[in-house]
Image (cartoon, one colour):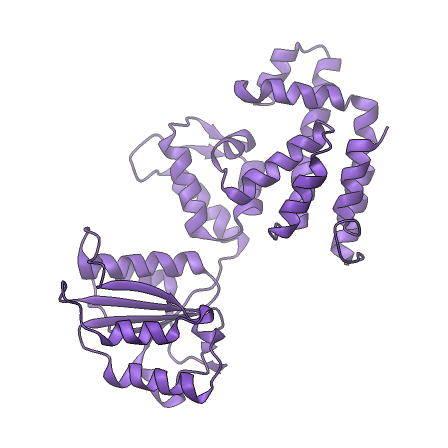
Length: 347
C-alpha cells in the first residue's frame, strides 16, 4: 500500500457534503465502514435528492466478490433515466494488481463520463495497488478511522443529552455505555441506529443496561443475550447456542463480559433480598423491566448464592485463558465450552 496524499478528515468531509460542490472521484480509506456508508448516502442525496435514484443510476459493487468488471461496465454506461449516476465499488484493496484488473481500472478512469460520480473504498490506509500511483491524485481521498472508545462514549452522551427530535434529554449510565460498545463496537453508524431506536421508543429519564438489552437486539447481540439467558437457566441448549455464536464470529470476550454482568446482577438481587427487600422491591431497584422479571427469577432460583459463588471463578478462568490465547481449535477446546459445562452441568 502507498500512503495517500492530502487525505481529508472524515468528520469534516461529512459536514462538507451538505454544502460544498461534489467531486467526481472519491477514494474512501480506513476501517470505519459505517461512516463510509453515511457519507455515500450523503453524496447520493446531493445527486438525487430525497427520492430513490432510478435503478440504472446508482449501484454498489463488491470488488472482492468478483464484481469489478460489472462495476466498470455500469460506470461507463450512461443512465437512461437520470442526468447523474453514482457507482460505488467497495473493498478495491482486495483486488490483486494483475494485468486484467489494471487494464479495467485504467479504462474506468480514462472513460468515466462526467455525469458519473465514482466512489472506491478500501479498508487499508494507503492507496490500493490497483490504482496507478500516477492517478491517485485524481481522487479526493478521505480517511475513515474508527474512533477511540472515549470518543464513542462522548458521542453517545451528546446524542442522548440533546436529541435531534427535540425530545427530553436522557442520561445514560456507564454500564449501559459499556454494553453498547461491547455489542456494537466503535461503529458510530450502528450505535446511532441503536440510539435512534431508544429515542423513538419514548424512553425517559435514564438509559440503563436493561434499556440496551430491550432495544439493541440486532442478530449478533440477540444471539448473545439468548446464550446468557440459557446459561443462567442451566439449559442444555446453551451448547448449541454457543456453537452457533462462535461460528458467526461473535467475540468470546463479549460473551464473558455479559455473563459476568448477569452474575453480578443476580448476586446483587440475592444481597438485597437477604437484607430485607421484598422481591418486587429488589427487582425495581435493579431496574429489571417487568417483562423480563419472570425470566430473571428463573435464573435467580437456578443460581442461589452458594451455587452462584462457584460461577465467578469459572468466569475469571475463562477470561484469563481467552486473553492468553491458551486454547486449541474447535468448540470443545474453547474456554467458553468449559464455562458452559460448569454453569449448565455443574453442581
